[in-house]
Length: 254
Ligand SMILES: Nc1ncnc2c1ncn2[C@@H]1O[C@H](COP(=O)(O)OP(=O)(O)OP(=O)(O)O)[C@@H](O)[C@H]1O
Ligand SMILES: [Mg+2]
Image (cartoon, rainbow, N blue to C red; front, side, top):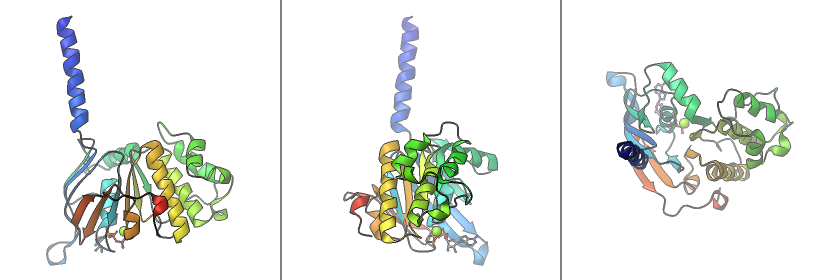
């Protein structure tokens, strides 16, 4: 009996130990190379970083600096030439496409610059088709409400503004309750007012569902809403710092 209790305690302490030390996302020495020899292009050249749970991380960099490559590797859309990706301390290997598919399906949500909505489905149906493929989807009405699109449920994409369409795209990405939401220039096609709105809703997703979010952008102002800002240049990390002057998305001057 004493022995069993001792074992239970040991098990519990070991679990606590691992919870405390476990890293959420860890990328080690990532290299992405296109071509060989003299023609080699390094989209990423020895990039290492960590992302903590519930963070909003903004990755800044000019065109061609490697932002999308980095995001696609973190999300298991693309594979590295060299390096290691750990998700909750488990190595994600890119050798078998099925491993990456499972990793993406279980953990990752993507939002891109263009909304990729299905034209002949309504807003609610666009979200529902994704929910039907998920193990534990969030409640559709709750997600639509959080994103301020509950009053648009029966409209078709062509009847929405760009900002509204992007909020539907965000709903499609978050309905499966991903642990990591990856956003590639999500306001790139929007005017400043709609950009501000979309970013406010992104922040709300982080607060309400505890989703860890990575936003890539070339807009310095957007970086101010990040808890952490990473700057990329020519496939390398220039700086990676906690943002001690973080402001709310609603205060961004876009
Ligand atoms: N298939 C490919 N073959 C060769 N080079 C590539 C390929 N895909 C990307 N690259 C190069 O890798 C580099 C990084 O590209 P990436 O798309 O990650 O940049 P980015 O920072 O997202 O740029 P943007 O802001 O314009 O979207 C660029 O120099 C690009 O030309
Ligand atoms: Mg890009």
